[in-house]
Image 1 (cartoon, rainbow, N blue to C red):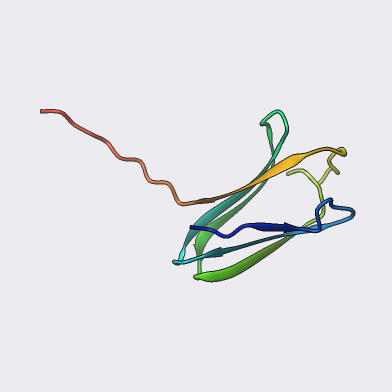
Image 2 (cartoon, helix red, strand yellow):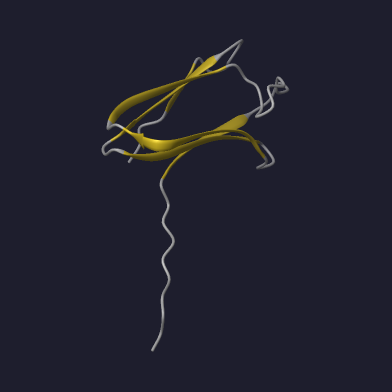
Length: 88
């Protein structure tokens, strides 16, 4: 379970994306526009320690271009593992 807070909201200049995790795990933080297009991603390949984490975001996309005014969604996802089921 993550506890996600984004402030200030509305954002002018930069914003803080803050979340906590109960366990040490891989985390993917993504920002999506209102149409569902992923515009910014932070991938923490190494395990983050349990506790409070913070990302300072300047409102830019993955190539450093500023995003337009609008509503954006922030998603924090823990590691996902694929599972294969074989029926006999």
